[in-house]
Image 1 (cartoon, rainbow, N blue to C red):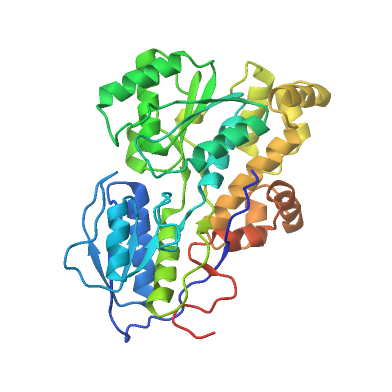
Image 2 (image 1 turned 90 degrees about the horizontal axis):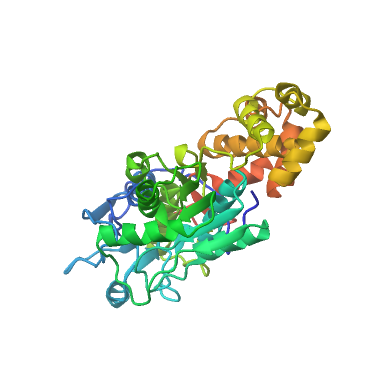
Length: 419
């Protein structure tokens, strides 16, 4: 569950005042509105602007992979954009506008500050989700036609897989491919690739759109999802997730937080403040687990039974002796089987499950740490703190500070205030 070091961490702040009497800011939002990622970013920007505005927005209904451009003749103060083509970068720079890039592309390096989710952390999280379910064969499917994308996500999946002693496979795309190709051609290529993979295998796809194509290809190829092929998307998109058969597990990349943080950085710049000198990378929230990974990739019935019991009962005050009693084996036998199948002890699995659930409550609620400790089976705050240090290398409070809904750089004054 450990996440890689990030170029810049931000500590939480919430705009305290509605400074509605100031100058109106005109901001262009060049973000696709056809995905959960895009709508989440837009919502985060809107929430921030509601607290510090007034802001007036230019916003059009852009589609996935559409080449975004600055509107001709538009006069404004700033731009929040997914800078996905060189022409857009040139237009923004020529107009002299303050701009924050929220993409994973490298087009804005050295030109605009970038605020986005840490893609390496996303890759680690997606791969770890599959590894913790017993998969020892992992695979990655890159996006179609992204010439300026550096594929850090895929590298992180591969590094995590190999670091856990798993074999790693990658779907290789032809050189010079276009942004899109006929869907039946893509599905046919995936079917052929899936036939050549060892089973069972856990597949990480770039985005839920690509992950849904994998579940369709698996069905056409005659493989069961998740028993033979488990699938997780690296960027949650609700429509793709629920329309998939079966529904998709995917990484919640915290798009609302990205939007709020990008808006805060842009606000500082529009007020004459400095832009961050390094990319601001936010940690993903976690994995939203659905049927596409609801499996334990092992033929060991005892380990599978124990894992189900742990996940179902982790919120209570169960201990490993309860797991042993439920599985009708000795503690030593259970520990030996866990070590052979999952590479960890039953106690470590129980701790991981509780930490995962505590992380979600720390991120999504304002409940106190002692209350969360009680609700996730730790009981006492100090037990939860020890578990967090063991799994994440930080305290629960530090985790909350680094994953709160609105972010700013540590030590900076709130937007609109002097230091």
